[in-house]
Image (cartoon, rainbow, N blue to C red; front, side):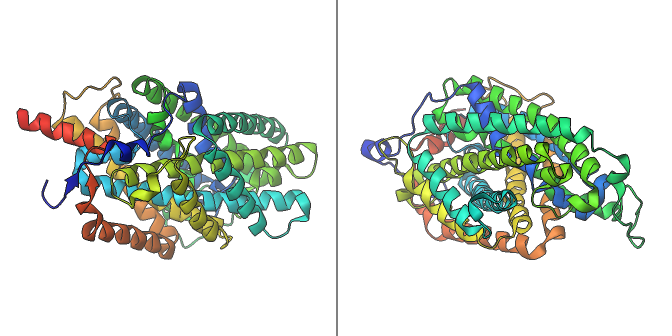
Length: 470
């Protein structure tokens, strides 16, 4: 392969980099998918009200919901055909070669390394609002969260996924409690109480910041679904992944579509668009004082913890896969006696903790969305390329609509990448610089040290061999 050098590693090399297989079925995977995202229902999305008002955020949410549905259907097909721990990186590696694979894996890694830092700041806001332990400075909370949940992950994937499933179930109960309580506070007038910017094109009560506000609200609408695409990262630890990964990710998006609609409408209608636009715990503030608000506050903390906990899992598996294949330093993929990748859990955790100390949840959210949207562009291109180039590749699940479905997701994902620069060009620019730095590392160093007998590389080499035979 031009410009890339691969070598074979010993059986001992791969033996030190083994994940525990058969630890999850489709229900646990569906729980994992919801767990990745459920914190986005409790906090973060509401900053989009400041960008587009209720109307702008609602339209953005409908568009983004459509994108994620198409994205998930495309990834369900890819994960059934290529079940490996690399997830999106594995798909792009097969379709776009080593450069495309590494670019996709890097974008995913940026998303999953930064998202927990954003969630940590929201956890801090919830803890402070509850007055727990007398904490008034969030950094203690950030440190405790990272240390505790990385520790649980180090104990093994089976234990971690079961803990995550229970926490996620509690978080969903919290959303039901919130919905029932919020109906009594709902007022249609609250949806449009943001002052209209008369200078903006298309400005109205429904779109107080005009048409451009819809576009600017897209990164925050993404927070309702961000990271659900991480379900395929559990493929190597799943029983019958060709069947269970597609079922799990599709079940997860079905739940998230409902929760998005309920939370957006009821939170804004109960608390007011203006009041919710800068809240660190919008569901609680929408309910005001009282038993329901206090209960949702405690359960909301569980929701934030669920996503924080599960995205740690996601970043460790993406880093593990890239390291095992030689794209990143191979020491990062060594697993412990419980088959958990030690350094792949710890190193991004340290980076995330440092980022969380900024306390800038909205800023970190936009940075995570940049990585996510860029990865979506590359993964949807991968689906289309594989449909065209390898039409006969075994696909236990096939995307309804095929390349048309993923083509729609591709267009919206491109718009989402641009939208991150509309919201905060500095934050998006920094992410682009980090992404470029990773690509320089690959160009100069790691492309000469890829591991040909790692599972992800074997998938690609098999495809190349079949192509040469034909």
